Length: 133
Image (cartoon, rainbow, N blue to C red; front, top):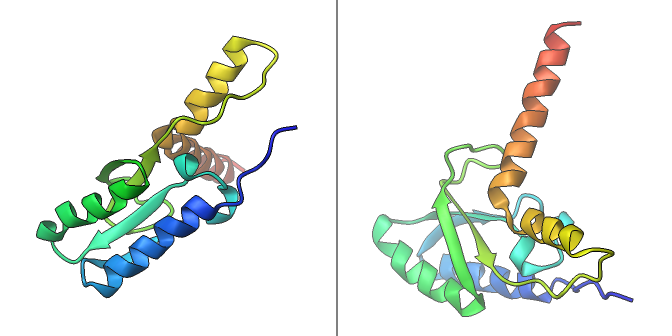
């Protein structure tokens, strides 16, 4: 039986973000869908650095938890914080009926952008349906 991670890796990242906030490098940070994620590589984080110069130190500190992938939060759906990031990691092998199914699951879990597009599309469809009632 597969075990679900207890979220301790996410808790460690939260401690690092709290430390960076206390050091004056980060103004604010959020994990909008925190209750959905138990594994670090699937969690979505957002932050606001105190200055552009502090970003290098932020990414260095967070890289202790794994490879950090970050980008500007231009969509600003779940939060208005300017930078979104996640950790690139390899999930444990998923016992699946077929390799194709396992690959599909892995690509979905790793894709922050797909999650954002899904939420955005859902909101657009909802607005469209409401406007045509």
